[in-house]
Image (cartoon, rainbow, N blue to C red):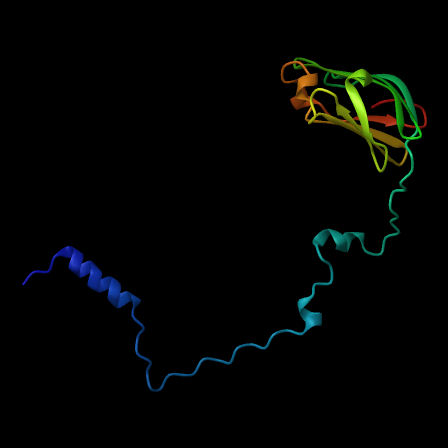
Length: 177
């Protein structure tokens, strides 16, 4: 009698899934390892970055109103030209006009007339009046003030926004880089 291939495969599959009988002289499985104590299971640091920061004298950046004045122009090695006119007093933006031209990609332009100030602390936040997703944030890190643009594709020509980086201003002398 010849079995169909499907019946043969079914019987092999059922045989493979069955549990083999235990031998009478088999060795019992070792007892489960006891759970480690709480001190052993808790890592010394929550993540690997923290171990590099341990034992360093790091202090949080102070939260204070931003004050910066800049009227600068900067050109970098790849042909990006930045022009900025900025005045912020006690976290209130008095004037803001930025133009960043990326060689071969287009220009992005930002003017205070197109924005409304949404926040002062911990960061200055400007929101575009017509494009609610477009925001400009300004914050201080040491002597530098960073001006970052988020979701402002409509303020740029072509694909210029894909190449737009934050503008950094030295708050001591107003130079941008």
